[in-house]
Length: 336
Image (cartoon, rainbow, N blue to C red; front, side, top):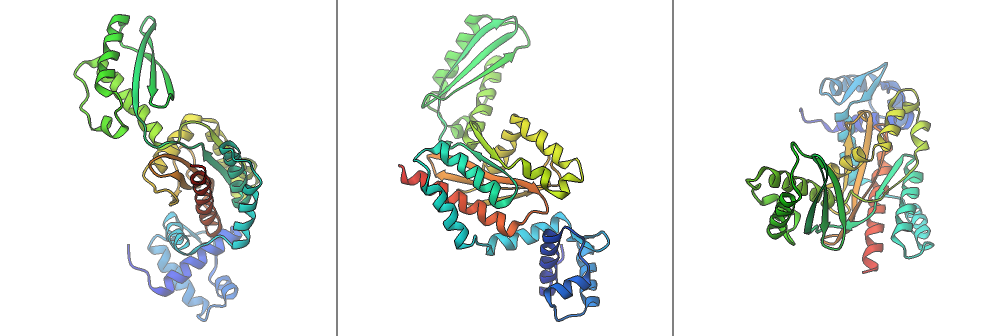
C-alpha cells in the first residue's frame, strides 16, 4: 500500500476521529471548519479522494473509514493514548474498597470496563499458565459411548463424552489410558505438542483430544467468564439500526464460541499488551474487540477486554483496557 504523506496522515486521523465522534460521513468543509485547517476544502477533498483510492476511506455522502483506515488510526492511538490521571485515581479507589478476593476483582473489573468504555466487557478468571498432564481415565458407558476424564497437576479436571466408531471393551480402554499415563505424566502442553501421535488409532484419537484440551487450558480462557454492559450493545445506534446487536447477544450466549474467540485472540499476546481485532467472525463482522492479558508471567494469567462497534472510541478504550490489565496484574503480584 502506498506510503502516506504527512498531510494525508493528518487528514486520515481527523476523518476517523470525526466519524467516531459523530457517526456521520465526513465532508471536506466540515473537516476544515471543525479543526481549523490552514488548507482549502478543495485540497482536503483531493486528499480524501486519494485516501479512498488507497483503501483507507470509502464514500457515503462524504467519507467514512474502512478497516484499513481504522487500523492506521488505532496504531497511532496505541502509541500515544493515555488514560487521564483522574480516571486512573477513580478506578484505583474503587478497587481499594474491595476485599482481597480475586472473584470480587473480576466482577468489579468487568463493571468498570463496561462503564468506562460503554461497551460489553469480558474478564476471564486467572488460571495457571503452566498446564501439566497428570492422568487420563477412559470409562465405557454404553454402546460406542465412553467418558474421558482428564486430570491436570493441581487437581483441575476436564470431562468429555466421546462416541467411538465401534464398541471397545473396558479392558482395551484401560490399556490405552495406562500407556498414555506412562508416556505423558507431568508433561507440559509444549512437550505434548512436540510429540508424534501414537500408532494405535484409538490411542491417537485420545492423544489428540488431550492436546486440544491442554491448548484450551493454556490460553487461560477456560473457567469463569465475567461479563457486564450487555445493555450497551442495544443502546449503540449502529447496532440498534441493524441485526448486529442481536447477533452479538446470541454470540455471548454461546459459551464455546466465546471461549474459542478469547483463546485464539489472546494466546500469543504479552501480559499488559493490547490487541485490537476488527471485523471478527462468528457474525460480529462490524464489531471490534480490544483485549489484553493480565496476571503473573509463567504462573497465572487471564484475559480481559471489551467488545463494541467498529466505530469505537479507541483513544479511551485502548488505554482503559491497558490500565485495567496492569492494575489486575499488580493486585495479583501483591498477593504472592
